[in-house]
Image (cartoon, rainbow, N blue to C red):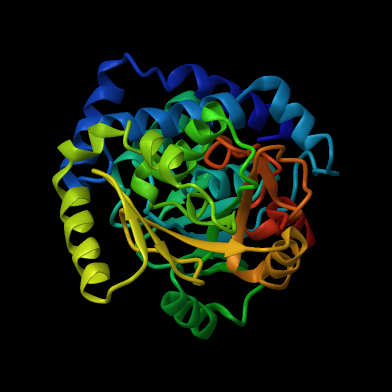
Length: 340
């Protein structure tokens, strides 16, 4: 397949991922049976984001125009170890390997097999030659490079087994928001989506907020409490009850509502159904801290989203809608693939 063929297949995939089709509805229902975090709301949101941002014809062409992509490259086997924390989270890596012209050999996450197989089967139907470019594997043998995403523990495992190959190995990172106290209700409502979409399980979800000294948390808590649908999800509310109980026993400084609690903590990583907060006196201190902790942070959200605090900064409400060139960890996946 040449570059035009690959682009055409992706454009057709956008149309094939029809949220009203019986095949999609069946895949969505089966995905939920295997993973109760993959609700209808979350799966639809992930698919719509992929269709709008990753499979739009003009956006794809603008993206690839930034690189010198070979029309008919010498195929290399690129192993991809996918995460499964949110629906189709590994799609961008698959897309990058496919558009580069290489062969993707994929180790699926046990948490996200149904949806990924559904998308890959759609691609096979679009062009049978894609079966030579995208392969699902139980073991990643005969590879030339590896892209792997996992936890801090799995990072050490990946480095041990795959460190001899050119690699792009990712570990835990978190989303952070910076508030100044000048945010209106619309800003806070957008931020609430960054916090609670996908139950806060994504590395781009906001797990910590910086707030000015003596910040009034009541407006934010009120808006976060609008997400009452969370009370209908047993796994989420069990985590809320358990993690809240731990914080109460530890006598942590917390602010709570019906669906989430805010806990004073310097760590970027928060438990499910909680968000950490840290107060600041000087906004420049926050900027310096964020840049010093670059390797711990995936994205920063702010009212302006204009990179005032951090290179990978977006406006409230945009953390879970990354563009094609908003790469995980700020490492250009296509550039990595082209350098092999």
